[in-house]
Structures are given as structure tokens and as C-alpha cells.
Image (cartoon, rainbow over all chains, first blue to last red; front, side, top):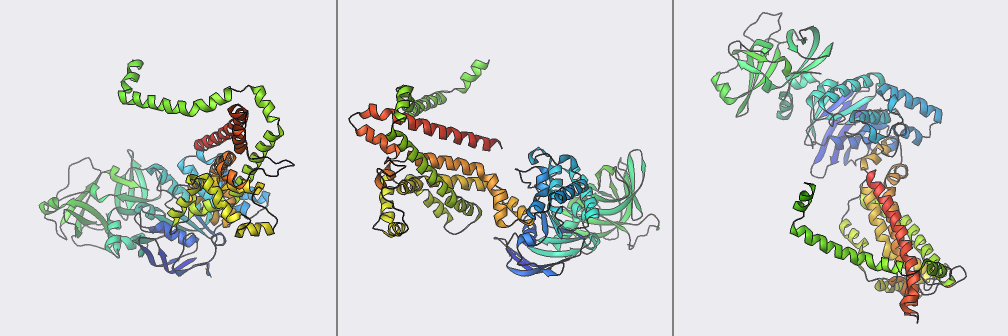
Length: 362
Length: 274
């Protein structure tokens, strides 16, 4: 368990201030924020690598605010896998154990175990500069995990990867966390990544935590303009793959069945960009595989563009004009001109249409 | 086609610049080469066998080496601090470290006498602990160190700058104290720069004339009283033998510096590859 109370850190141009967090043991906790919000510094402050002006930090009930870095039991993995370039993969992973002067046999056993967990046994004899980005990141993870830290800090660990690699690594991080059960604090600027991995998410903006909660909290009750903007940038759904047909996959998202393209099975997340959804008064004749009838439930006017939330009732319940709890909200982005032409108001019934390929499944 | 391409690239400006470049290259290369090839190897060998000559060369190699070792001990920590910390006046300090490079070297010698001469504070202190200064090996070492240590500090600093500070941070989270992280991570990763800086410092110390000439003439060294090699060359030149007498020793000095320089370049270029 990690508890952070009224933490204050000087970032030079601004302050990280009034940071209060309560992170449960074994939790996968996400800190979400834009570039320059102070995420890396917050992690380094927790690790003791960055001086703290004020506030206190506890790990497992023990205050560590002024404890030396090497005594804290906090591991860190940076975005661009800073491996020790002069050591082999094996020596990188074994570094912490050698510092602790563990017996040779024990080092070997521990390195082998962790290498197996993160999937790098075949890389142990290699040198860091011969590895791919994903491989380096796994080595960095193994190196941090092998000394069994109480907390593992991940600083944008997937941001330097291409989308495909990122998705695979998300799966591997989840699997690793399931097996190792370490408390993880993972910072990212990617909303999807936060949704895919985090049990809970804290949103950090300009040095302040603006909201802590689950995905639903963010979507339903954004505490500020800033969180709302993060939440509006994507439609995110939890769903379950229910079948496949002609290369398309049916995913059930709370009673609404959408068609997507994915190889994944079981519980999945879906994301859909607001600008990829078409709104019309009549059903559209098009190649798009997904079309649903619903009612406008919210309108956020941003001047030249307008966010329209359309609530779609689950298949099981009869379509009604009023908005029911449990309906699916699709946030759509349209231009002011379309908004005026369609004469949209709250309660107006419309069709939302989007292509199967516009859905990102992860 | 290839030929016309090359000609097309060589516009009039390039031709003029290349010509000027060749001039300065000739100016740099011809004098040492001509000196080296106008003595027979036999003459050079016989010169080296003279006590006066070999003891002088050994003294110079030895003193420059001691200067470099002291420079490593005191300069590398400073280089690390300069690389890792920001503080008020850092720029100024970095500039001041390079001042010995631009100071007239005879002025360096005089300045050293003002501190280490037996009438002055440090000199008195050194005397009481049994270290003489003027006309002692220690004076040669100090003079060499003064004029050459900036090369080592600057090079080591560049080396540390090239080591990602996050590597040290990771090492710390893995249980290493600041000392361990320095020894296990920073030092091995910066050693190439430190080593090439050391070679540069050594070679610069080895070549020093002005400062050494002021603080130390003939110094006691392994049962003989040699002068530093650059001073020996001057003495020989001013002897009745003149240019001819000075030439074989000069060749030896050029050869020694050439070897040091080749070592330096080899290490430096490997560093670039890694």
C-alpha cells in the first residue's frame, strides 16, 4: 500500500502540489496526464530520485519521505528502456541482486525465474544494443522486478512503441502483473492505455491531481473540463466477443452488439473516435456495418465543432424516446454547420453509423 | 559520368579552399617530418643511450605520469560534479578551469613560485612535511599538472555528460548507493573519455617547457640531475652544437608524442563506434 499526503515538488517552471493518493496493495494504478503535467517527476519523487518540498509518502505503513533511494524498495522502468549498455542482458537483470551480494546460485535462480515470467530467457546472453524496443522494455521490467520491489513505477513504458507492439505489451504487462502481484504505478498520456491496464486512474494536470477513480467515474462524472476533454477524446466501452462472421467479430457492449475487426477473444475494450461516427435523421445506405437508433442526450458546444452524445438503448429493451439508465452513450463529433442543418436538440432521435474498421479493440 | 560529377561539385570556391587547406597542412606536417628524416636511426639510438638524454626523457615521462594520476584523482570528481549539477556561477567556473590553457606558460611558472616557493605559505608547509619544491621533481609535476589538467577535466566532463543520468537513477533504485552507482555505472561508461583525456593531459604535460623552466632546472632523479626533455632540447640548441645537437633528441620527443597521440586517437575512435 502506498499513501501520499499533500506532496509538493518544485518542477522549476511550476509546482507539483497537493498530491494525495491512496494506492492499494497489488493495485495496477494509472496516472494519466498530458506531456509536461509532471508525471515523471511525481514518479521520481516517490522513488526518492527527485527532492520533495513538502508532504509525506508511506509504503506499507512505513514513512519513506526522507529515506534513501536504495532503501525504499521501489523499482522504476523508463519510457526508453535505459539498460546498462556495458552489461549483458543477464548482468542487467542480475545487477540489483549483485549489489545486494546475493549468493551466485540464488542470483542465477532468480534471474531465470523472472526471465521466464517476462519472456526473455533466450535473450540473456545478448547485449542491450542488439535488442528491439519491446525486448529492451521486457529486460528493464525483469531488472526492476528481480529484486522484488514493493512498488514498481512505470514511466510511459509503452509510449515509444508502435501501436501493434504497444497492444501486445499491454497484454504482457497485464499477465506479468497477474503473476507477480506487485503494486504498480504506471504513468501515461494515453487514455486507452489507462483503460486497458488500470484498476483505477488518477488524472494529473499542470501539477495537480484533478480526479481519481474508475473508467466509469470519468465517463459519467468528469470532475472538470480537463477530465471531460480526456474522456471525450474517445468512446470507450467494455465488451465481450460473442462470435465471428465473414472476418468480422461481434462484440457485445452492454446489450448492444457491434461489429469490429479483431483477433482478440473474451473480455475486451473498444475505442471509437468521436469523429468516426456519422449522425443522421434517417438510416444511412452505406457499407458501414454498425448503425444504431438512439436519442441525443447531451450537447457540448465548442464553437466550430460540437460534441453530441447519443444514447442507444440495449437490444433487449424496447426503444423509447426517453433516456434509460444502462443505455450506451456514443459521443460524436460534428461541425457546427451539420449541427445546425440537422437541428439537433436534446431528445431528438437520430441514427449513429460507423464502420467496423473504425473500432479499435484492445 | 563520374568525372563530370566530381568536376561539377568542385566549383571555384571549393578549389580555392582546398588549395588553402593544403597550404596549412603542409605547414603542419613538413617541419616535424623533415626533422625526423634528417637524422639517421643510428644517431638517434646513440643519442638515446646518453645518460643525460635518457634520464631526461624518463624524468619527463615519469613526472607527466604522476601529474596525470593526481589529475585523475582530483579532476575526475570535479568533472562529475560539473556534469551532474547546476549551480550559480557554473559557467564561470568552467571557463576558469580552461584559463591555464591560454595563460603564458612562463607566467604559470612565476605564479606557481608565488604559492609554492619556499618563502610562501604552501611552500613553507610543504617544506615542513619534507617536500621541497623549487628544483625538485615535485615542481616539474606541479608545473605540468597546472598547464595540462584542464584537458582531463574537460574530457571527463564530456564523458559523464554522455552517460544518461537515468542509468544512475535506475542503479539507485536497484539498491546501489551513490558510490556504487558511480563505480559500477558512471565510471565504466565514461572511462573512454577519461582515458583519452588522460593521454592528452599526459602528452601536454610531457611537452611543457615554459612553466617547468621557471620552477625547475636540473632536478635530482634516480642518481642523476636531468632537466625535463623540452628544456634539454633548448639547452642543446643553445650549446655550440646548435641545431644539429638538438635534432636527435627532438626526433625522440616527436616520436614519443606521436605514439601517445595514436593511442589517444585509437581510444577516441572506438568510443565513437560504441
